[in-house]
Length: 69
Image (cartoon, rainbow, N blue to C red; front, side):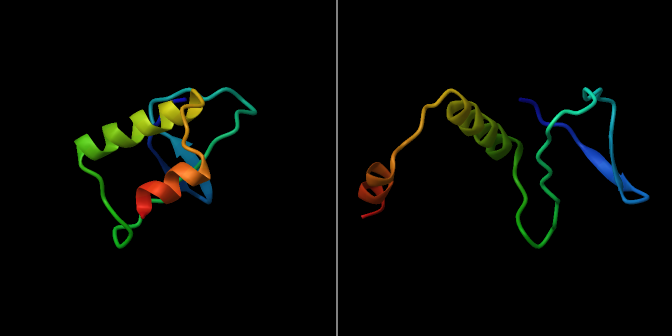
């Protein structure tokens, strides 16, 4: 998994300086200034969390609920 940036041009997503294999599945997060912004440190923490999830390093529901209470 990797993160890259792009722009919508004529209704299509154009990825900047990155080759993505034809037929690849992608996830698109649309940047909206009113939603949130991340610092470089927060973005790094998000990427680390995504990598943990991809490795199967997850919490089950009971662990999450216990941490919230």
